[in-house]
Image 1 (cartoon, rainbow, N blue to C red):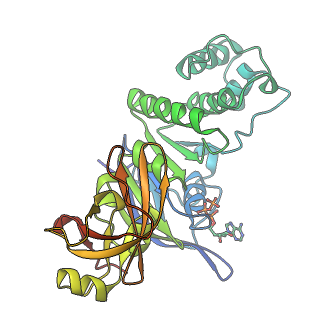
Image 2 (tube, rainbow, N blue to C red):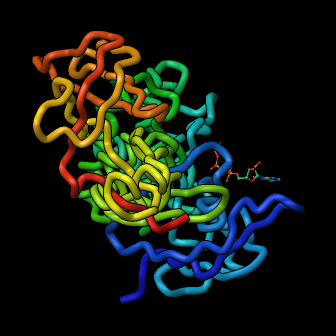
Image 3 (tube, rainbow, N blue to C red):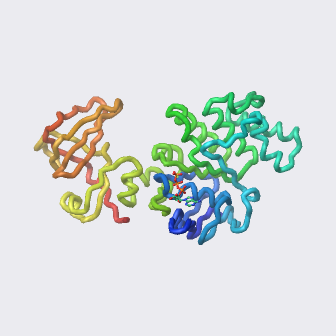
Length: 332
Ligand code: ATP
């Protein structure tokens, strides 16, 4: 059974810019795969390479085992949902959704039937006669999704599809998208720079840094066992301890990641204290309080759950953590 999408040593350079630099990864059929990384790290270029809007400078892309070199976008079993939706303002919702079927030469009755079914799928039944301008942002996003799904792609490419939505709607659409993907069983390749979104939706996450994949794994792997300081910092904020500090605390001179929610704050000199620190500031965030600490000049963060005693700013405190929670990183 070939992978849904295979990148084999794929690079895409623009002059001196290595937008994508020797990427090798396999995305399984039916997988919800997130490409996560900061702006400019090469995620969108990877998606465009799969869609056929870009050609690799080196390497090979295959979809279901078929090498895509020389295959034009409209002949690939993939479809793309863009961040800006790219709906036609003068066409109504039904004709927007049915557009790809019209290009494919399908008859009017079939187009309308398929468009109505796709609108039903994205929970917009009965909206066919409206123009995009008469819809909310979330509804437009759903129309863009319906338009991509109506062609029944085996792989759906989504480029920051929720980027334009406010937080509440974004969270709602995250759940809906995930449920839809499960229901349809098709492969989703989802580009985002929002780590919360990637962790909560994806089966696996590839973390991009400067055109390369720094780590690929299940959300809990990437979060709990980051391979490099970059991944530790980008995927949820983490305390990154330099090798000399880890050497002192854990006996191995390697950078280490320590998640703020795993740091415990104790009274100074309390039994079980592994280090001492000073409280620089505290910030109330509702569900948690963030404590900014200085440990021998090294900035650290701790997150206290609701109800925990919050130390005074300026106070000396003891720190502890479970030794297993100090995650040593041997990647670079
Ligand atoms: P964002 O989240 O901002 O969309 P991204 O991770 O998707 O970022 P890409 O859009 O893939 O990043 O861009 C990767 C790098 O390649 C960037 O430095 C970008 O400026 C460069 N780049 C992308 N397309 C082109 C192009 N057509 N010509 C020249 N440089 C390009």
